Length: 159
Image (cartoon, rainbow, N blue to C red; front, side, top):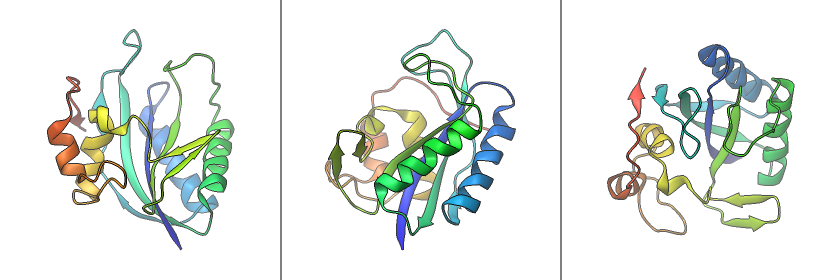
């Protein structure tokens, strides 16, 4: 079995209901959720003229390989009405793979670990709650260390 850390989030519609629906779909279509963080609210990162995001980190177990997991997550996003119109724009749901086991993948359509995760409090804060000692396979630092080093000024507020 493979273990993957995911970040789920969104800032359109009923954010909490959307995250709950996504978790149900992940459980039914991909595999069990072993751990989940609290929900955190954060102002939009990168494109600030939009509503705040609600985010949560998950640890899942799956039989899927990383590329198939990404395809399954994209299918869940599509089924939930996500339309990719604008880079960093508002979205009903966003499902990202942060880590997949301790693998390093750099292909045309998938990069793991997520290439920007160490720069974003909204990823690191919920991830620290469920995996404080997980070591980033490239940066060789724990999630706790990455959060301490992170220069992102945006606050993550536990909901």
